[in-house]
Length: 327
Figure 1 (tube, one colour):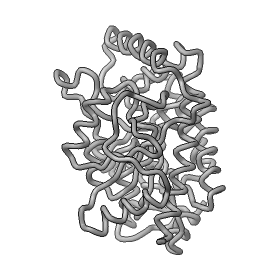
Figure 2: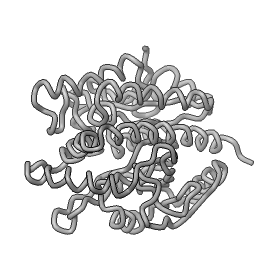
Figure 3: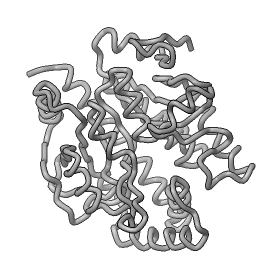
């Protein structure tokens, strides 16, 4: 598919024809990350979920824009073939014994800090939440759907391990739609960090922070809204008032696909203990733990992950449409 340079960042940014036309015409666009494809779910579920998210966005009359770095270009709006390319990289990486590194089959896992290096070295990289937010902002996309955000890791008071996602949420003028904070993290400390950095955390049709695989966490969200129009109104107020930065909208996983919190927490404790014994650290922890959670729950976490990803994409499309239509 032909790509077109966009805006003042044409040396590094390429948009698909579909995304370029949508932005030019003022149509709703939803950004999607690519780490879930190259470093998250196993193949072929990763590709199936990515395409399902795109399909549900199109069904809502919005345009999906899956983002990655391909051969030194920030590509906004991957083709099906490009999604397949990233999806197959997981199997290739495991064959070469790199399943716990920052790469799978030569595909870098790119947060904001990695983007310039990937561009300069003409690398291929799957973008994390932080990386995708940065790229979406460059392209002028205001809504982003993901599974769960990164946050403050358990044991962070000793390790100082805090995801770059949180600072990017405070920086990029984008509505991030998720099922809460990744369940393997310290949810309470992550909420505190978001408050410190001025990120509005909004529960969509819920008073309680969703816990990714589970609908509840026992933690209250600071704010609640109940319609797409309310989400759009808050986003407009944030940006038009000059406050800037992003918003986090948390959508509970559909009830039919939710897992009991106790089951999830037990599996997480086991997986984190194994990671510590094997001295797996940094960015390698999350993919390892997600893989072990799938094994420990007989694949239930993968099914739940798919359901929440598609649900978030659905609501993100509705929020993007509401942003384009003032009441």
